[in-house]
Image 1 (spheres, rainbow, N blue to C red):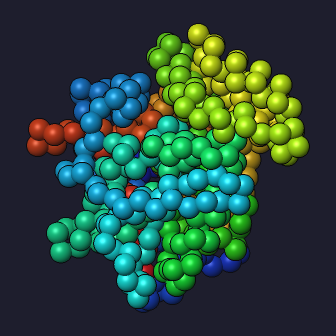
Image 2: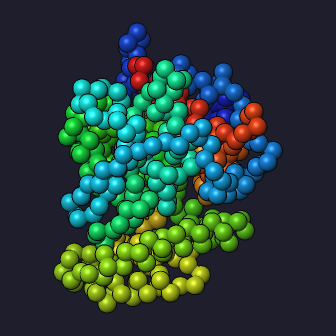
Length: 399
């Protein structure tokens, strides 16, 4: 099928399906994903407004850098209450709930959005704050009136490591543990999910692994890194900013996590099931801690891949790329990416994979960068992606 052009947004989706989708309307019964999107998410339909980046950030690189270094566009700081849970392998997961008082009643049936941030992020990330401020603001104050819980990845946002594992796009066990925990006191509440960058990849892998039995009813992904082989190649040999700034910044950020949690990786016996001897672990640690030119790809090759049992960087990147499993998703999944994203450029996006599955919709804007989409209105910066995200989850709530 040819992509559908909606103003300057191109939609890749297949409307031909053999089973009704899990998007329902009280008045219309079962809807296709495209019908739901046309009715509930005008920002990504033919009636939607055109995304035009601010002239202050005209390209994908500028949008991406500002997303990482600039302040949040949220009109107020989102407040959280934190709960830490232990998962089966001894790991510690920090969950940040918002609004803080909205989870006290077990009778409240307001939907909950599980938020998965990008690499080195957390609930304090500017893009997380930008999305959650309107999503969790009361309806009486013009917000969506929903609830959310941010899944802070191991070692991120002030979380100490208590087991010798970090996080990666195919590590879905932690998300499964979080869902089990939420279901222990929210047994009948609809669970949705919002993923950013690497968190979007992890979320997509979970949806593919669980298929029709997914505990998440619908999801929205922002700047999904579908292809880690291609992304790594861009970081290693792409644009100057990607090679000389983004790649080392991400690498140094992960090294900082390892340095702060050395004991978690070294205080193990050779029989603890990691497949690495104590000598091999020490060697991997040394490579990471003393590499003066560490990058994301070198960190992954020297540390994450071997600790996770992969025999090569190439195999790890291929296994963790969610584009390979999109065909197995069986709940509504909408992905928004920009063609000028320096980490996941347009030529790497899974157009054919999206068009082969009626449960998946890929929306691509020409500009926007990586978790950027900055516009300027009334003298202040806004991130345009927040609008379709709010429309999507409000539409699900109404249906």
